[in-house]
Image 1 (spheres, rainbow, N blue to C red):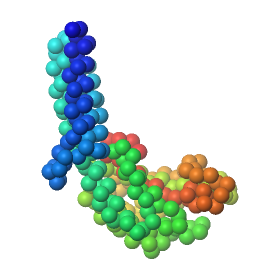
Image 2 (cartoon, rainbow, N blue to C red):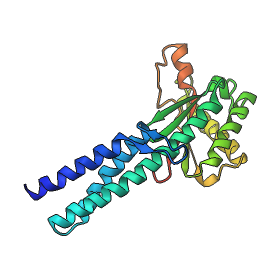
Image 3 (tube, rainbow, N blue to C red):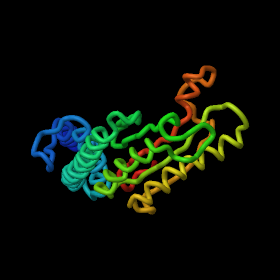
Image 4 (cartoon, rainbow, N blue to C red):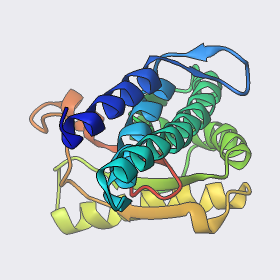
Length: 224
């Protein structure tokens, strides 16, 4: 068996085992979903890093196995952390009109303008501040996440005006969360105007979907 084959076999085994299941330290239950995926990715990355750092073929194999084990632990831990945060956010956002979506290790809160702002306004509604109180409560319990806040508009009207409105709305959300105890160093605010639609601007329904603020939560160290 070649040195390359001897290296690939244990790496594949490490990734498969990592992806099968991990234990949730909060509940003691076995998690086979996002946590397992995070562990599998961590195992693969850790294995590759370990293999590269070795000097000889035997050393590479041993280092790859060690790297896979370490990477799986880190990846699984991130998955568990985000799983817990997602669960609490879903419970808190019930009935608010704010959608919670999981994208890998990231969590996206979609806040439509019908829930958060009045027409042509960057002032948060009472319903929005109530929901953001709950969001802030969860965020302060999970400080190892970056909070990316992005404002978006439809294409109606002047593009430069829409850009400024999207920025002001995103800033309103960021400022409110900061006022509720979320550390400013975690908050990254940006506006995209009409440049990132998620539906057609040719219908009122589509335009309503495009008028939104998205809060994307990423594990510390990832870019939003």
